[in-house]
Image (cartoon, rainbow, N blue to C red; front, side, top):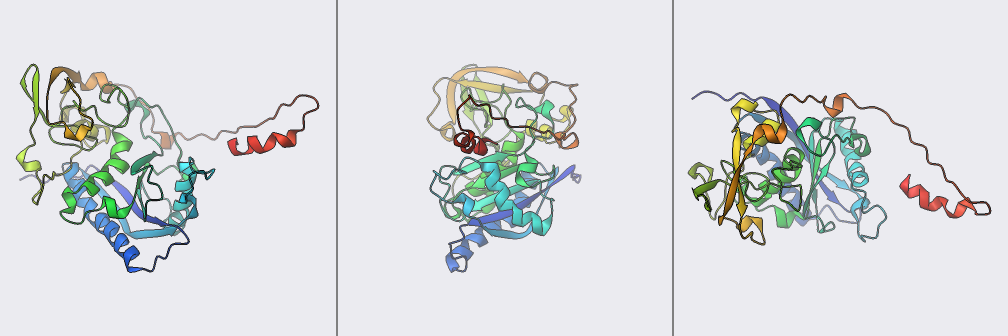
Length: 339
């Protein structure tokens, strides 16, 4: 059997956030950190399987514990919406210790302080604006990185997200790959997203297996009847209906792990007649289908220099215009937070 050669390597740091008032010396807290550490140890193997052996993920040598008040309740905290500020605050201690060496960071919450997220991705930069409909963006300096960090996954409440049994096939592993790497590479493709959001695959997108971001192994029974049939080699040994996690072949193309001629040139998109309330429940459907071509989605021949190679400084001036007789000191406090 031929050895698969790794084509690209990424790095990922693991962080557990606690409030400064929390007691991080308790056995309960240590048990939570141990769960995250087990994820840290397991994810390189899961990532290797998800990328068909073409990608390597190197993780931090330990889980960093950061006590940071910026994630505190109440939600009325003026900084609540400033995810970049919160992430930057949390990563400050990590960068001081390790330097700017991380492509991805997984931040786990020690409790449910950010229960509005559950799991969420904070997009930091895109490497190639030609491969997304979102356009170029770069927020690296807002979080303390000098052009390296790609995406941060926020994963809420360790107890709820990290089952220990059969960890490679667990929902916790899916959440980790989904929120950190999946959302960085697999979103904002108009032809592949649902009509009401841009963060996941349309529920009818065909894949060779169940994939990160929810493509499915659709099989066309006839022109109006479709079923999801998981390959036997995707099932993970253990109780329940667990699956080895995979990235969609087109995501492997986006990630630079496969050439265009190494992935399917077209895939099927099923237009489900009666979509369920939850995409996870969809295993059989009636409806119609269409073929989507790789070239139509991404186009070929477009060249865009990676964002990290073309960062430019910009300066912005804030000027307050006032009518005669008005005192600017009353308006300045409102301008300050915007600045």
